[in-house]
Image 1 (cartoon, rainbow, N blue to C red):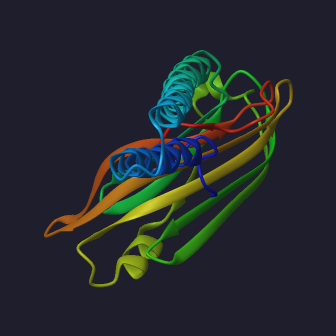
Image 2 (cartoon, rainbow, N blue to C red):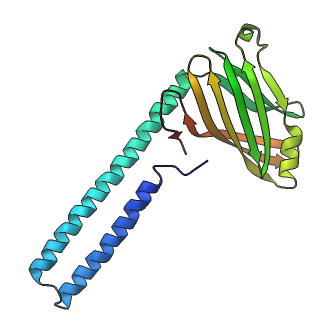
Image 3 (cartoon, rainbow, N blue to C red):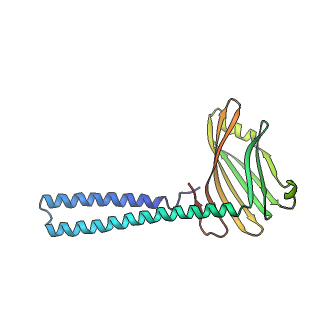
Length: 209
């Protein structure tokens, strides 16, 4: 999936602040043992204070920018849905269901990864012509895949990668996670989370987690 591009920047800030604290301790120690004069110590302390202030302001800017990007992307995802998909039980079967709305889509690729096992789903063309009758929904039984992947485990996180081309909008990509928990009555499906998404109208991926 790759590392969150904004996640590494705050880490650099913490490293910079740690180095500044070391420099501060060095300056104070140098002044106490008379290795540095008062004027030298004062100038160095001012420089350290300026760099620390800039670092903290940049840290705050990155966090605000990241939060705003997530909010905007979440709103766009809500008002511009094209593909609808779900994983749910029907009787004793675990089904992956998906369909398109608004526009036809092409070259739909879905990859499910669970406990090191992978399942790939590909659909060349999904149309909306039968959406009024609900006949455009496709389903695939993933019961065996989930049970074989879990084996004797009590539960695991399923990762779902999705990509497709909309006839009108362009290429979409998204990455989700879904928790599966084994119970006496079968598998329990927990909340689904979106990790990142890439939209046709954005050059970069938008990370949510």
